[in-house]
Length: 304
Image (cartoon, rainbow, N blue to C red; front, side):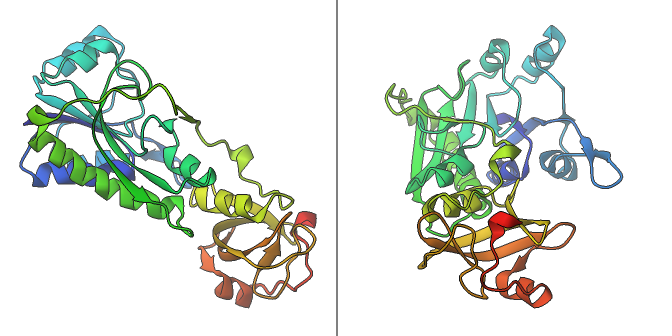
């Protein structure tokens, strides 16, 4: 098929690769524009931009698709279908209507649960036992279109967003190839009105750990916000990112270190901190972190 690919972050790259490997023709790749990044704040192309250029594709990064000119340029590609995954721009109706068979979105949740910007993080933070991927026929509403193919997967008890991200990206890549191979045989299934939830964009104000909360909630917060923006606490007045954790047995004052291996008491129960990161340093497992910065049992993290 002749495909317009629309995606931006790392999550989207395996999908582009899978479409190429399956022998589809990529008419053009749309992604977000390069933006300042790194210490020098130089414009850096997005992961999809970099990959598409390496593959020799026509890369386009308009700041909006609302203009008649952009919509005409999109339609002029005469695509059979557009494949959209974490693109980052809303598609106006003329864009949705331009490909012969419409626009297909790869969404990392079991719709209608977790429509919106941060479905991976919200699923972990809410304690969902399962999530998955839906291939959806796009329409004007936010992730409201009928579903062509869905597949579920369990969320591991210690799984972080980083790990789930990689699993669902590969799952979505395989599913879109399967969908395109059987598109004429698939019956779009309208989403039910019951069970709709919205995965609001993660705000950095959500990242500081409140140790008075139950251990199960703190553990979900740490895993759900790993690697970005990263849940954090203070140790010795320094902000420390917490990137992995697990539930543990123990009780104490909220924020109290119960031993010398970074077991921390919460409002109810305790957690083990498994991976941490100091500002400007690489992430480390707990044992390595403690060799460089011993933290004594009895230290209370709520006091910084």
